[in-house]
Length: 69
Image (cartoon, rainbow, N blue to C red; front, side):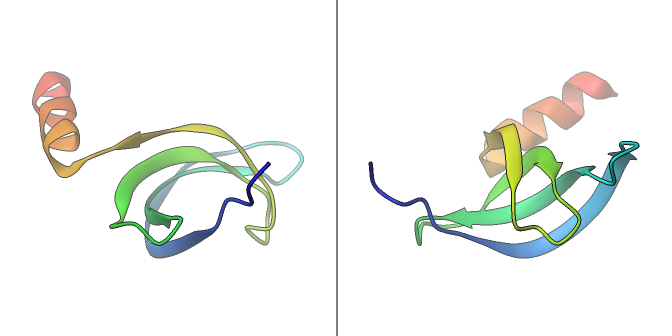
């Protein structure tokens, strides 16, 4: 299985924090050297481990924001 690389380009905000210290965050993340996408997922305190999450393109994030209004 190939390694997955990531770079958190911009930390946009924390949505919640669990009792174990993991945070659910909205960030701009570059996966495997690709252009960054909006990303919502849980992260360990030092961003060493992550949970499953969702990624959104700029257009998808705009549509989500419109739906939430």
